[in-house]
Image (cartoon, rainbow, N blue to C red; front, side, top):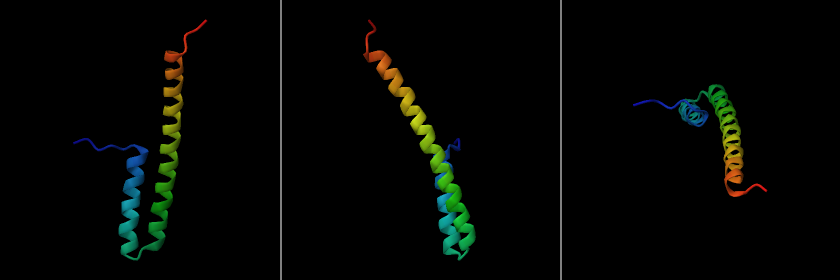
Length: 67
């Protein structure tokens, strides 16, 4: 099985790691993981916004006849 390494999956991995570190009392390391997760989520949102704009342009092109 292929492992997905997109930003959303990486954010989820960091969040799970942070949960384990928190349970182990490793607070500074957990904070670091949460910061990484937030950065990955921000990247995923940017990618999603780009995909939305591309899809919107394609939709407008298909639905608006020229002339």
